[in-house]
Amino acid sequence: MLGHKEKKAKKNEAAVDETQVQNNDSYLGDPDNIIECDGLVKIYKTDEVEVMALQGLELNIKRGDLIAIIGKSGSGKSTLLNMIGGLERPSAGKMYADGKDLFAMSDKELVEYRRHTVGFVWQKNSRNLLPYMTAVENVQVPMFFDKTNKSDKEKRAIELLTMVGLEDKINSYPAQMSGGEQQRVAIAIALANNPKILLADEPTGAVDSKTSNMIQDLFRKLNEELGITIIIVTHDISLANKVGRVVMISDGKISTEKIMKEDYRNKINELSSESFAAEDSHEEYSVLDKAHRVQINEDMLASAGIDTNKVKVKVVDGQIIITKE
Image 1 (spheres, one colour):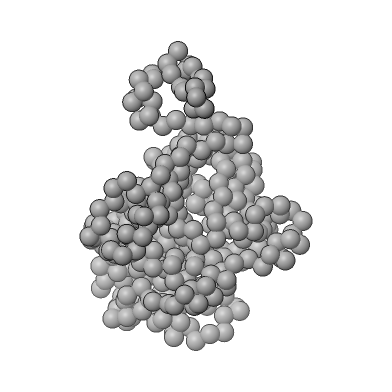
Image 2: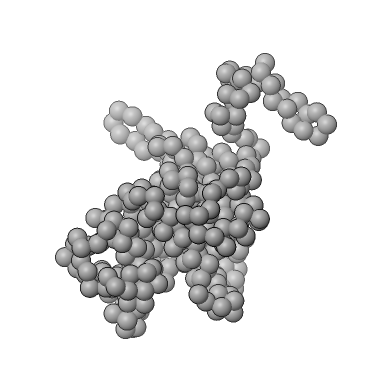
């Protein structure tokens, strides 16, 4: 484990140059945020159907955050992840990544962004690993596409595999490793070019609960030691309970956020994932958008007996009360 000064140095390395941000005339946001989404809209069209995946989504993510994005299938969470990764452009809206207007970039600039700013971990290991290469060879692949990388690539790859606990699998092929081991190799690959943002799409979706716990602990370790921002799209509620911030997407917008309670954070740092039960771990908030609109989830509506699209809203003793018409 790194000492406090080393951790601080790592986090400073990941931080944006504020002078660079200030010189970017198009950027008017907070330099503490590594991601800023403003009114993101994404519409997928075919000859017969039009689907709105994102509907004016707004979201800020601070540098060094460990965040989970959750939501039902079709809610828009994977679309958001692809946009942060520079793989898709919106139909409307803006996104700033590391102080730069992501959607004002040319295709060539987006390639450089994906090469140096973000690292990807996909759910399917066939998308992460080349089956005819060993673990150490797989980790070196992204380095060969970075012309500025003059380091000893094999040495760097071994260091990364050691960091994810696979020093004994360096010369193993994917078929010789378990699903969890393959996923840890994928994480090492994602870190190969020292990205500022690690994007993980359902990283525990194809492994058992014990392996899931191991991967959860690894993400927390990397976030703490490297200061890297980690954004995870997941259905795994146990994983969501282990991150500092949970964002719920519903119908293409942020509906609620959960922020980890400080006493829970202290406990989870002392105990392993397998031995700690996540109960009352986060404080949940509904999110107001810029137009002061708020989404109320189905469970809350059901508990309040609200089954209509019209409600009464009034203020009582400083509290907003919503009741059936």
